[in-house]
Image (cartoon, rainbow, N blue to C red; front, side, top):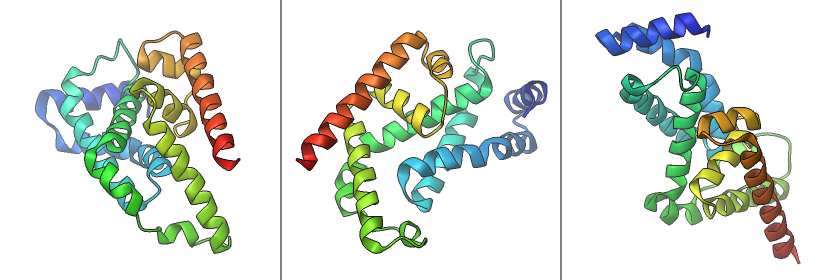
Amino acid sequence: MEGKKEQRLIRKIVRRGDRKAAGELVEAYYREIFAFVARQTGGREAAFDLTQDIFVSMLVSLPNYDGEKAAFRTWLYRIAANKVVDRYRSLAYRRSRDSLPLEEDALSDDRCLSEALEDREQAEEILRMLDGFPAETQEILRLHIFAEQTFDAIGEMLSLPTSTVKTRYYRAVERIRKELAHETH
């Protein structure tokens, strides 16, 4: 979405509570944010619920958005990353994650069951490891891996130098590699 149109919609929402403008703004980013969330939650229903929460939070927080500090897309991804981190930290998630049912979507392609289970287990293990990192490190990893954001963009979102973002990312990746290697031996 072009910046001027985006800013016009934001003004309409903040000043007049314009529902049509809100719908247009949400629609412009919905698929992108849904895909970002779905890659991290593993299930369409969970991704749908979390994406709804992200857009509700965005609309509630819109009066606090400062276009001079960050582009709207950057600001929205920051909300999304925080919501994903919050989900994995929540007590409800901690209780239920060991008993999550295998999603039918995970088996819908041509891979055999054992491969699907192995991939899912690996992905769940990595997501569990992410849960053990500080929130800011989780955000860096999630934004780079799942949202495919550049280190520069992540630095802007988190108000950190790009070198710090890279250092935290590569340290975290190395820690994950070591833990995975340790578990397989």
